Image 1: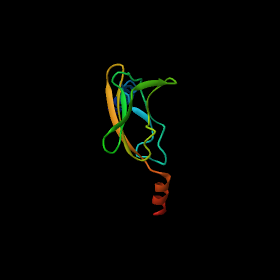
Image 2: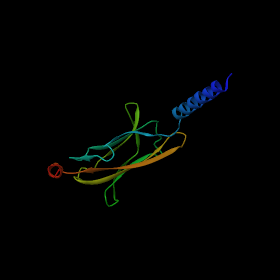
Image 3: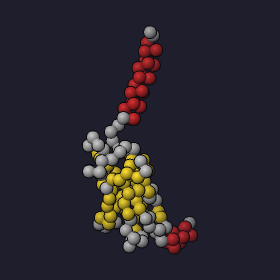
Length: 135
């Protein structure tokens, strides 16, 4: 076999290994979030929803929301919804505007953990319209 064919075969096998390893990764990766990271909403959401790539273990999985001052305003653990594993947290009804920090910790059955966080903002419709008028 020529050295070029050997090199090509080695590259192909290496790529296959990397793809296979990614598919069997035991880590739960965030696939969807609502509200979206960095979004600005006109009204508070009813819930914050996170969906992950792997099934979560309730023990060790947690979602919590903090306000701009760093006060924890809500939290929830993992739950199964329609066969997909998600974390869903009810957003407090008494909070109308502000910037909110969502934190999450996702644990899988084999005890691997991933963590992450993101921000979203709630502005009143009047504030959003007046800021758009300034453009």
